[in-house]
Length: 443
Image (cartoon, rainbow, N blue to C red; front, side, top):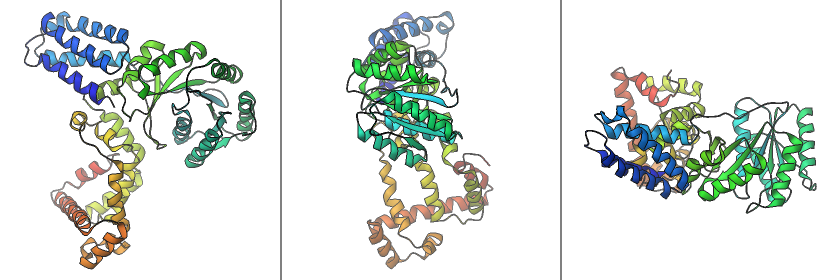
């Protein structure tokens, strides 16, 4: 996400490296490169020009002219302008009414149904009782998909597969929600491959009948400027409340995220990556701007860790580390919790400076599978006492896990070195520091 844009912006700022001050001459080249980088990222040309004009105006201000580090100050100005471009501040979803109704709109293939499931999971974690409603009356597969997602996240799904009236289905779902104490109703609607009058009429009828607290427009960020144009067409007809950007982990240039707020004047409320139900994040313009400029997003990384890690488990683990009893069962437990945090390459990109370093490295989340297979092929006794694993046991573990003896040896060696490091830190009184690295709650 935004890899190419980040690299091109970094190159643009190199023009000011070593300069003692910003002048009209040296800033002109940098601004030109920034504008080109934004347009290459599929940002609307008019938007790119407006933003770079604003950056130039501020960069040539009196305070900046006397700056010692003009490159850093221009990065700061660019960061502020990108943040403003994407909305300035985060806006939460509105939950009003009993039940509160959230209408999901968008084209076919944009990820509406998957997002509906993710949003249900997100709200359920906040302690809300949610009902998913299947109102895509044209695609039986969409109804089946929503049922599968509902079962996956533990949320009820209301559907009438034989009914071809979306408004009646949604109205019946609301009555069902009231009787069963569901406080939020998420309505998944039908889409088309392109904007057409029939689809617009149907979603408009649904909005008029349901009077939702929120109408969210879901858009595939990989479609670039087409996403922005589609958003404008939907907004002109529906006047939706917010935007959801899906597939941000794909080969996207970022133009939709950077342009959509300025064009439709509606906030981006959520971003979604991958198929996992946990892969949904509230959108923060300032954090996204920092990531684009290679400054990372530690706040989101910590929040993800807090959501994924169990505090009681962390306390239990701290005791085992202090007693030098950390074993493969504990290691496996930590792997499971790290996987809950999301795409590994995306997570590493949140660490300041890592985004650029990770560009050419392909990190497959499946890379954990051989490690997990090896550990799961061990007996419980072997997991608790790795030192007892001899040559014959290694052979059995390799066969059972579908790996090789050298791979088993490598994992045992790495695990042994990790235990030695923990033991050394405990002797030096660093047990708490070791725990803080594993425990996001810092206790």
